[in-house]
Image (tube, rainbow, N blue to C red; front, side, top):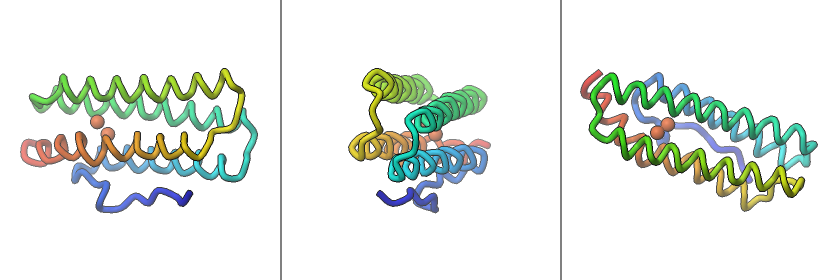
Length: 133
Ligand SMILES: [Fe+2]
Ligand SMILES: [Fe+2]
C-alpha cells in the first residue's frame, strides 16, 4: 500500500487542525511502512501506541476549540471521536492478544478510520471555525 499523501483534499482550512492531521498522517505512514517491511512486532506496537495517543491528544484539541467557539455540533462530533478511539483500541488489543503482524486489511481499516473522519466531520467543523475564528 502506498503512503497516504497529505494535500489540500485533506485540509480543513484551519492551520492548527491541519498541523495535527499532518502529524497523524505521518504516523500512519510510518506504521504502514513498518508493516510493509515486516518490522518487529514490538516496534509496530510502539508506532500504534504513538498513533493512538497522538489521536487522543488531537481529539481533545478539537473538542477544546469546539467549546471555545460554541460549536453546536460538539456532542455528535465528540461521540464520533469516542467511537474512533474505541475501534482503534479494539484493533490494538486484538493484535496484542494474537501477537501477530498487522494485515493489509487492518491497515486499510486504519486508513479509512483516519481519513473518513477528517473528510466528513472535521471538514464541517473547519467550515464553522473559518467563519468564527
Ligand atoms: Fe481531526
Ligand atoms: Fe474530529
